[in-house]
Image (cartoon, rainbow, N blue to C red; front, side, top):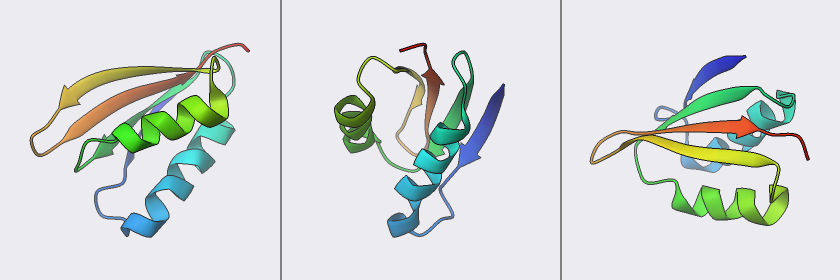
Length: 76
């Protein structure tokens, strides 16, 4: 499964909630493509702290207006 989650129109306070809801629905081998309007580096650090070793983070587009990151769940 690979879906797109475009959070650019969401209020900033809701974005991480939506991202982690999407993440929690993934099974190992599944991924989603995050589309954002700024560099999601703080989100990467949150994933690393909470889900270290369980995810892959693949930048597909890195600004200056749009960032696309493929986030996949891997077997723990």
